Length: 95
Image 1: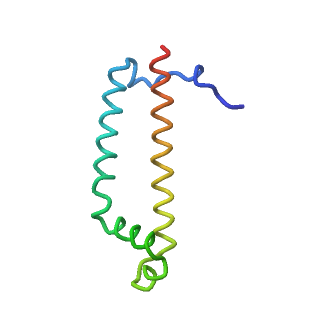
Image 2: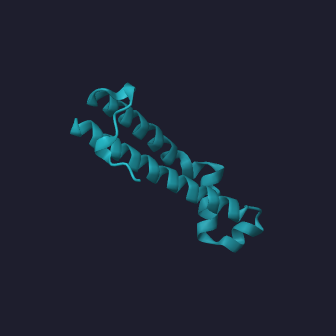
């Protein structure tokens, strides 16, 4: 049976909305930093190469399958974090 948002209780760390807001801002800054610098990393360059031309990326030695898995996993994690923060934010606002 699925749990509803109203039945969940806040974690002990976030008993008030300000502490949760500070946590969200810190996480946003951290994730933003990683996303901002991703194109400069080896993984970011591999993702760009696979996006532009899979065959050429494979020829120069990029593991296309692994790069696609990393891209999917990172997109999935960022979506899950956003959903989790939004859900918890609704909890903090509801009381």
